[in-house]
Image (cartoon, rainbow over all chains, first blue to last red; front, side):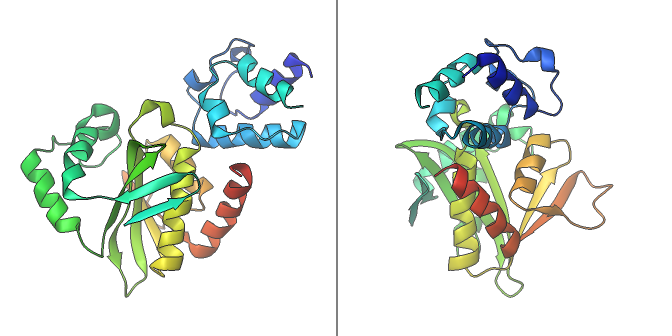
Length: 76
Length: 174
């Protein structure tokens, strides 16, 4: 699994946020566009792309995209 | 009355909890999304509870892992028309913009359509509350006719729309 590919897929979920905002250390819950729907969309993306089921706790417990990536990676 | 499902508990609002709700409701972070934005006094809250403590209004405290984190409701139920109005807010920041609001919506939708046997869920959403509009659309709500020039706009959801959305949500929070 590649972090850059993960960031790319993560960024694709967002419609109104500039791609440059998405970095490994981006605190995704601080993005203006972050919402409960985005939380579900991230779960759906990880399910579809990586066949890993993220839980609400995983998202609550993560601050950065890297932290989410590490959870997904650990379950592959 | 208590609903335990989808990992959360909805506990029917009782008089001993209305001060908590008043404090949440008076907090600017909640107040700014409400149509009624005046400060709510304890007396006003008591009168409000007297008005809503009946079978035409179901207000629940949302409890997650023993912590009271928000409020959800179906209010102004008209059993003849089969309508009622939905509402929800999450007070605790940790649970904002998370799966919890959807877990709550599943519980409330099932209460609304299967237990109370109502037909159309209504919602009023301030037109500048983009997150709430997206959230409600995800749940299958559609804007009613002639809402273009109204600030607090009316949306509606059918049982079919709820079930379609619920299937998607249940898959993701499984």
